[in-house]
Length: 393
Image (cartoon, rainbow, N blue to C red; front, top):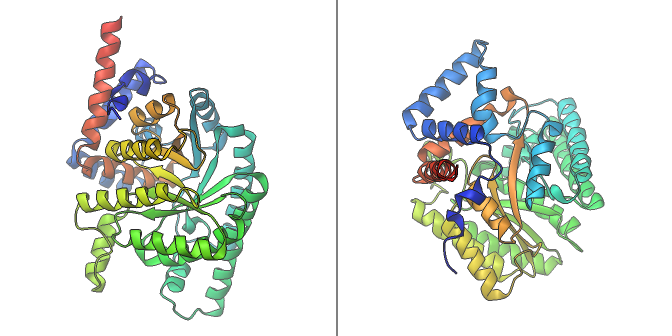
C-alpha cells in the first residue's frame, strides 16, 4: 500500500478556517517548547489555586484546541459538521474529579444515561460513548478491590455501587444500540477494571458488541492478556470489544513502581511500546470474528499496518468491527484522510467545564511536548496547508 494518504494537508484541514488554522499553528508552536508547557502548567495550577481570572484565556486557547465545548449541546455543530465529512465522534465527558460522594456518583450516572440518549439523538454521528471507571466510583475503592484487600462495610457498599452503575450504563447502551467504551486507568486499579468490564462483555456482548474495554500497550504484559481474554471469551460465548492505545500514565507508573519496589509494568522504550501495540493490533485483526477493535493511535505506521492487514484479509474498509480514532485537536491528517478513503474514522471528543477538564488538557500539552516527532509533524502539516492556501489565492 502506498504510504502517502496522510500527506494530504488540504483534506486534513478542510474544516479549519484560516483563523482556526493560525490558532492551531500558534498552539503547536507553544507545545513544541517543553519549558513553556512546564511553565504554563505551573502557572495554570497556581492561578486556579488562588482564583485568578485565567479561565477565559484557557477557554480560548488550549481548551478550544482539545475540547469540543463545555456542554454536550455546544459540541453538536462540530459533531454534525464532522459527520457530513464522514468522520464519526466518540463522546467523552472529560471531568477527572477523583473522589465523590455516593449521591454525587448517582447523579453522575444519571447524567451519563442522559448523555447516552443525547448521543442517540444525533443519529449515526456518535457510535460510542466513552467513560472513565473513576467517574463511576471511588479510586480508593477500585484500588482496594484490585489489591484484593478486605473491604469495610462502607467500602463494600461503595463497590456494589460501582458495579451497579457500570451495569446500568452497559445495559442502557445495549438496549438503545450505543457502544460503551471504558477507558483504561493506572496499573494499580486496572485489573479490577478489566475483571468488571469482562463481566459486562460476557453479559452484553452475546449477539452484538456493545461493551469495549481498553488496553494500554505501553504495558509489556498486554499481548498475553489479550490471548487469555480471547480464550475466556470463546469458552464463555461472548465477543470482545477492545480499544487499543499506547498509554497515558507512563511517568506516574514508573515512579510508583520504583517507590513501591515492584517491576515496572511499562515497556523500556518507545520501540518496545510500538512493538506491543502492533502485536496486539495484528492479534485483534487476525481474530476479527471474535474481536471488534478500536484503533486509537496518532502513529501513522500503525495506521498503515492496520490498513495493510485489512486489505490482506479482505476486511472491508467500512467493516463496523474496525474503527480508527484520533483525539480531537490532533492528527487531523490521519482522521480526515482515513475517512476520505472509506474507513470508519472517529474523533475522540472530550467536553466539560473548563476547570473540570484542566487535568486532561495538561496531559495533552505534556504529551505533545514529550512525544518525539508528534508536535513537529502536526506543525509541519499545518504550515504546509497555510502555504498551500497562500499560493492558491
